[in-house]
Structure formats: structure tokens, C-alpha cells
Length: 315
Image (tube, rainbow, N blue to C red; front, side, top):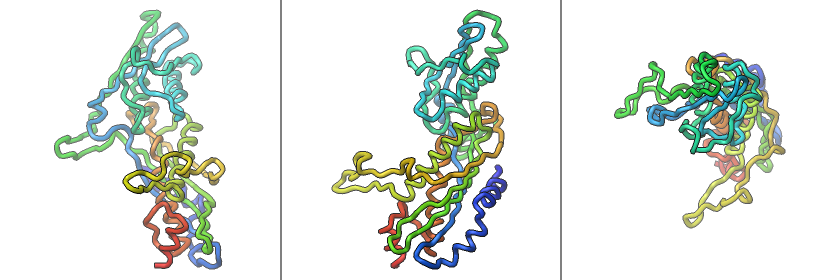
């Protein structure tokens, strides 16, 4: 775990210690604050989940210079099409454009498990890497050839299903984020002035995709902490669509400086772990800490709306 290295890099990127002292004076109408979030997220299903699913992935040789990925995992904007094809292409030493990854048809693909739980790269990607390695070794056997691999827990993972104790996840990814805000003490509106983050996702298969995941996740976390409200009235949710459930858009996105640390995981494809859900975990507590720092009060409730902050200050 490279938490200390990641923390030091975020402190330096954000100039955290200097700002922490400067902002503590809390003078004037507009007051700044800075906060930290240190977090982790498990990769794959918990406990024996992955062993129960026993996901299977197949790589199929179509021609001398072409192969196909057969899995049930779907592309939903997270970059699976590029990432999984890149894993197989690199392993087979073929151009990525020579790797087919058709939309899954359950009549012809194996059950590699659902596209959830930050598992697509670390679990399915590793199965594809293993299948591609074997396929490469057997490449000259036939014109058309398929190799399938099914998941088994690495031997180091120990889990007691009766006591619910042991290694809860196959692996963990980690993050550190700093958020700087400015609070208008007349209206209690809050502006985000900067975000700095460092993440350990093992080894990034495609850095552009990972940075996109990180920026999107952080923006979601900031929306969760600042403006997203979900409440009920007479037993029903008041926010029933995106018309009245407000989320941040690209216009609201602050500048995000993001870095990665390499920390290869032995049982991930090329050392990769997971990045899908991780980035959202730290932004909300870092935002709340920053707002609390600006106002000199603890902020334990989100979303930290102006009306919520006014009541908190008055107490």
C-alpha cells in the first residue's frame, strides 16, 4: 500500500500545508478551506462471490492475424471495449484493430459475470490475458481455435463464509484527494477552487481511460456532497427524474489535477486492479472537510447545501 507516497504527492500538488494555515484566519465575506479524503475500494465481488460466479472468458482465433473476445461484460461508457481489446492485443502481439469484441450475445458468449463491482478489468481482464497467453502458445494448431479460462481465487485469499471473516475482496485500489473551496458567508454558496488526486489502481492499462474514470468519479462525488438531494414525501421520492434531481454537469466541473502511482497486482492483467467506483469515494468527505475548514465548524451532513450550512453555523 503506497498511501504515504500518495498522501505526500497530494500535499505537494495542492500546497496543502500552506493553504491550511492561510485559510485558518477566516476573515472577510469569502472564506476558503481545504480538506483531504483518503479512501479505498474493493475490486470484484466480496467474499466468495467471484468463486461462486466462476466467470469464464474466451479468446478465439479467427484468422492468422485476427482474434475475438467472447465475454458477457458490456460497454457502457467505462472503456471496456478499448481496455479488454488492448489486453488481448498486447498479449497476442496483434494490432488492437485486429481484435473483435462484439456486443455480447448470451447465445454465443460464456458467462463472465455482470458488469459491476469494479470487476471487469481485474477479473475478466485477467481471464482474457490468461486465455490469450495459452492461445498464443497454441496459435499454429488450427486455423480457428478457442481458449477459455474460468476464475479461481488466488491461493493467498482466505475467506470464512460462515464467520464472514477474511479477505473481503481479491484486491483493493486506493486514493487520496484534496479539495479546495470558497464559501460566501452571506449566501453560503460554495465554489470549488481546485481538486488534486493521486490513485493506486495497480497499473493503468490505458491512462486516458483511467483519468476519465477518475475525473468523472470525482465530479460525481462532489455533486453528491454539494447539490444532490434525494428525499421523500408521503412515502414517495420527490426527485423522480433528472428534471428535479440536480447533478453537476461539465459546466460545473472544477479543474482536477490527477496522478497515478504504479503498484502492480500479481493477479491482475499486466498488474492492473480497478478504478470504476474508487474515485467517487473520497471526493465527498474531502469537500465536507474543506467547507468545515472554511467556516470553522465540523460538517457531518451532506449535501452541504446553503440552508444546511446556515443552520449549522447558527448552532
